[in-house]
View (cartoon, rainbow, N blue to C red):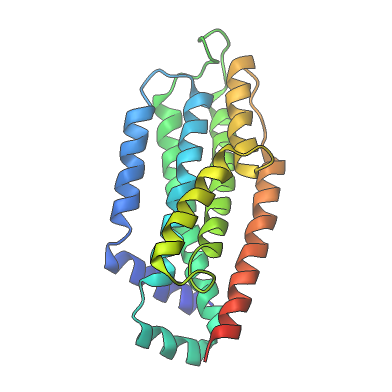
Length: 223
């Protein structure tokens, strides 16, 4: 699996298809996160924006390889393992992006509650923001896994389904991502730093199930 991950990571970096989602995410942060804003609000904003980026990175990884090369790799290592390597590569890339974003946002934001009334410990806030970002990266990867090949092969169906699912994952009550982000926003109002372990665990379970389903379907549809 390590060799497959290195192979997929090399494909992702060399393709430069990761540039549009990363640039768009950077612009999203530059517009919505300003120096001196309450740290928990800014971290919630950054985490929410990471979810569609994670789904986009999954699409890049599962569609970036030429069909002939993909068939050869699948024949050598197995279609399920090959597809899992694509999904994990995208997840790791989005998680790394979340770590960088969390660090930058924590450094530029004001360590205070909404209204700047109560001091918020920056290290605890950064840790909470990182957990929320990882939850969003996980759920975004699950969205990407269930709205791209082999589940949806048509671009005309996959892209709208991916965008809609990513939006719903951020705003619908009961979503781990929504719980993690709203926890940060609520914490900013009270000055208490949340610990979104439950949303992170829920996102992890959803992602594991989505990855397993996608890989099983890949193995079944593989020639």
